[in-house]
Length: 116
Image (tube, rainbow, N blue to C red):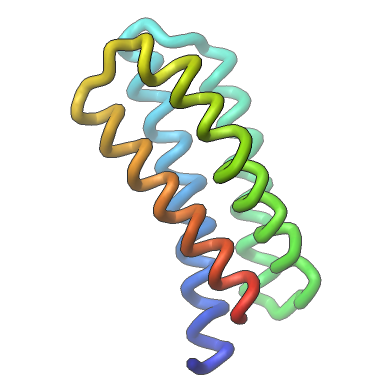
């Protein structure tokens, strides 16, 4: 596949994760969730968008930052989040949709960072 296509996929997946994460935290805030989660996700979202911008303008090493993010969140953060937060909620369809979407995007980020 074309490296430019993989770069576009990576940028899109990073932006998607930033948006999904922030939107979900705001949704949880409306259901009584903590404000700290929204603030933390806003900071992470800004980092993800800056990473996406770096990749979009051709800063090659930034894709390794994206890979580190995908691996850390996919293998450590999200499993802990599922066990400590999601399961005890009890989860609703929006919670499941966020979890699946976020994890899928992490997989896309990991693959696109390596291949691209």
